[in-house]
Each structure stands twice: as structure tokens, then as C-alpha cells.
Length: 42
Image (cartoon, rainbow, N blue to C red):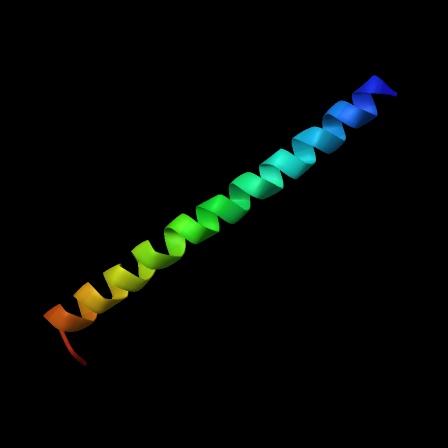
């Protein structure tokens, strides 16, 4: 019983971490695209 609660908690926290990573990575990848497009606009 306790193991299931722990694994459920772990799953939800890892999902939150992935959401945070997406939020952090999106602006970074967008800025990289803008920078690379600036350097060679093809």
C-alpha cells in the first residue's frame, strides 16, 4: 500500500519535472532558432 502511494507520488513529481523542463527548454530552443536564423538567413 505504501509502495503504491510512493510510486504514484514519484510519477507525479517526475511529470512535474518534465513540464518544468519543457517550460524552460521552449524559450531556449526558440532563442537558438532566432540566433541561428540571424547568422545564416536561408
